[in-house]
Image 1 (cartoon, rainbow, N blue to C red):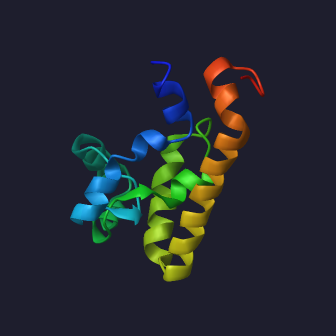
Image 2: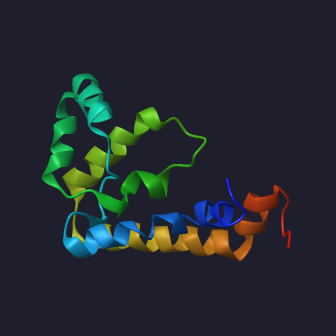
Length: 123
């Protein structure tokens, strides 16, 4: 990873190009993250109701991203996607959006140095 790529990835700012997809109407800001077709087929076989994620547009950020860390098993992600789809509302959309902003700001405030160097408060 490049010197520029590390902090962009750490703060998720590398996701900004997806905003073009939002402006085109192909994506929403909040919704289940896009999934590649082979993985979608596999998940539909394992979780029969997983096809329901097609009911909503994929999003730049999602319920699972605000609830899970990278250390957690991503096998649990479909349950969060389905919960968001079942309970979606303006209030939940705003909660996910605010949780995403909070995560980004907390990483910018102190997590970037740690992500780049592996040390806390590095300059």
